[in-house]
Image 1 (cartoon, rainbow, N blue to C red):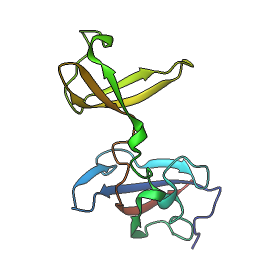
Image 2 (cartoon, rainbow, N blue to C red):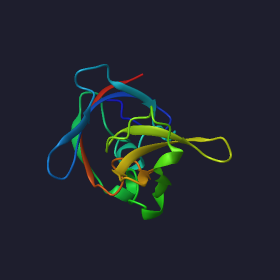
Image 3 (cartoon, rainbow, N blue to C red):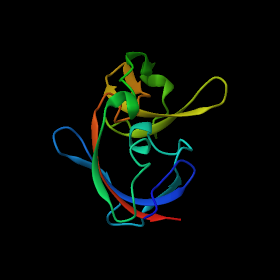
Amino acid sequence: MTEVKTGDTVRIHYTGRLEDGTVFDSSREREPLEFTVGSGQIIPGLENALPGMSVGEEKTVQVPCNEAYGEHDPNGRQEVPREQIPAEIPLDPGTALQMQMPDGRAVPVTVAEVGEQKVVLDANHPLAGQDLTFDVEMVEIV
């Protein structure tokens, strides 16, 4: 039976859960995720668990935050004076926005806090600082 190795293009189904069991993402209701193992297209902790798997095999993978989306970085939060944000931009906490950096790069941010004078934007990935669990099924080695 053929086993997955680095460089193989694979298709997997997965369900990602937080430590409390909450599902944050799943491919089960859509097409399997296709990528090349070892290319860095998915988080390292999940990618490193795939070599050696066979088609049809299922496993549960524990991924610590440093092998997923990293630690939550307090420097990723920035206070912005409210008057610098156009009135038409929604500022509900949890809203995903893009912030333009001085060098022209667009950085995804989330509205973390809203006050009368300031808005706190968070550039950390929403899953930063979280250990994750994935239930994985190897669907196909392409």
